[in-house]
Length: 593
Image (cartoon, rainbow, N blue to C red):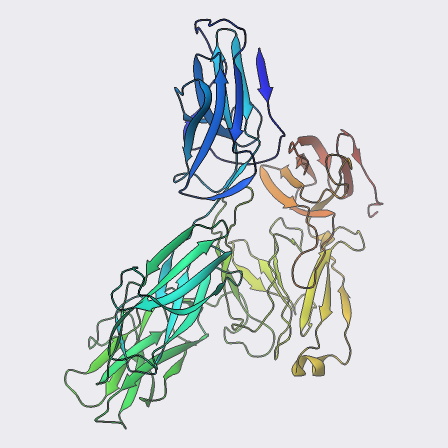
């Protein structure tokens, strides 16, 4: 016999990392009289977000019980096999307290429960409040990453990776490298939607000496992390040369123009020049150095044209040519990772609209928790600020079962829409113009099978916000690019209909997993999103390659219980409609003949 008490049920997906709870039912326990145990959870009584590493307090009442244990799970339903005990052998009684340590747990949504047992059976209660674990800041200084020397007036780049996308920050400096109240604010603000803080440290008003740069990052739930840069900034008045950029972690594609920032001064030789170079190591004088450019010591640096440079890791250096022995030399704190510009374009951006993108993560199949943030990173020949980027989990434009990447590039000089076709080896080849799309200043790309002929068509708007775009378009236009890829591979389009009571009729938030010949493809029904509120088609489109049908379709509906339904052996080459609670497969729209 099992008694379950809860205020409500809500969805979650969580991988347990502690001891699995094999059985909630008590066995062989002596009777205490009075029938079933009674268990009530008093706290947490409201949903709350908690940073990983914090303790979560649970307050409960458990009476008439000989065994009490606290657990968490990811579905809010007892005895489904996902329960993980975090406190065993707890005391019975009223107003009892235990705690969940979250330091080793992944982010996501947690349901907290208590099970109380005696010889008569087991009772289970869930807390009314759910816990959402969010990432704490993991501060990494990319600049300054080592000790540097600069003269007064130099703008020192500060680059910090917080590991978060939603946070506030306060950059500061002090003279002792200890967070003790003597810190001077550099700047404070809110995140811009990325994990990076990129600012400048102005040394104009500083006297000579050492300065330590630090940051305090505060998460959306109020937890804070303070860290100092591993390198200190020393303001000097004598001779010095210092490479300030590229900073640690820079990745570029062969053909990119890499900015080299150098601060240098020799008061006794104001006309001395500066030699910038790249090097396979950071040991000067061993013959590996290749000159980039010789400039004035007051030039501030140079531009490294990487066209023709072999792929690999390169340090960037600078030598002050003032005749001193040994020479005064500085290297970048870390190497530049130079990748090959394969798969299209010339790597340098010739104005043709061609280019290359290399997706770096995910590098292989990966499973993540629902609700967690997964970072997608890439290298591209599109210059910083030179495009509007929209990343899709779809489309599969040629129905080969491998999804492509569509980038709308708008508002800047010589920018065109880009489509990167995924190759057999996982690389991507730029193919917009070869596919017949030559669209300058492309905005708000929308992809759908508009004519229901079994492939994804492309709709692109145009931007006239800047001068070059206004010349490219004499008026705002929206263009439809018809696709004819239905001849190259199988396909299946799925339309979902919620019951309108427990799940919205449009099924926004539903997840669909289809399996065909051992391969799984996953898509989610989305609402409007992005700049300008773009809305993709509510019909999910799957390219199947050589498959003529799918083995199964699994739908996880966006209702409170996160209910799952499954349809087996569904034929391809058509649009199907799956209705929540209905085992039949419907065809709501005419399929192509």
